[in-house]
Length: 111
Length: 113
Image 1 (cartoon, rainbow over the protein chains, first blue to last red):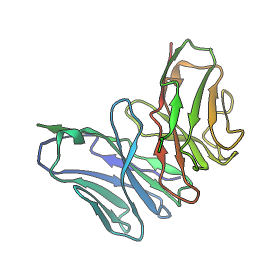
Image 2 (image 1 turned 180 degrees about the horizontal axis):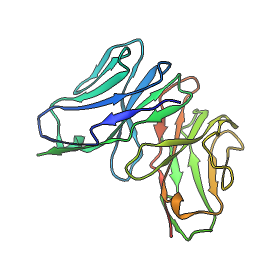
Image 3 (image 1 turned 90 degrees about the vertical axis):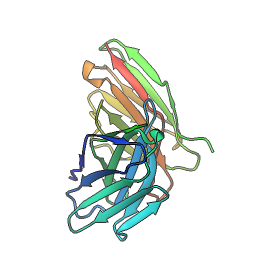
Image 4 (image 1 turned 135 degrees about the horizontal axis):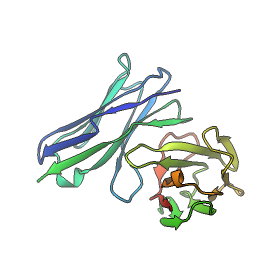
């Protein structure tokens, strides 16, 4: 089965700085890569996703890049704000049949 | 549009007792997922439904866990009997037919004493 590894497990940045979270996957058949933000006491919320036919996708301050050859994808958050503080999860899926999640990154944005 | 609804939000029980969780997906979402999330970990799939059919239950511990989605809408996940190691958050998610995007509910936090 698929194995998704996520790094770092914790990340602290100063407000206004950028944050980068990286994930690797093992199954070359995976073709859908969502990123979720989970705040305390809430369920994961989709913030951005990318499919295997695209190398990069951007939505305001959030961007995701995908390197299919190396089997890794990254989340980039620019101009971080305190409300970006949360746990972020990456996931990999083969046509939505089975989602495999990373172990999460706890992001703290220091005002 | 209402999101995925789960109840209860919190449940505390003693070991060996039964417990049930309920999920109502977003209207029109025929795919429903139940996930287990241990502290500090990502969600792990327990079971996936397409309408009322369980199409992937390979990770469901069938000796004590059961699930149903009788009318293809809301679903119930049951544990009987509960063990200490079952303490976790149980998440429900749903998606539209043919779509990858999953929408998660707030989860039920289970504590087994």
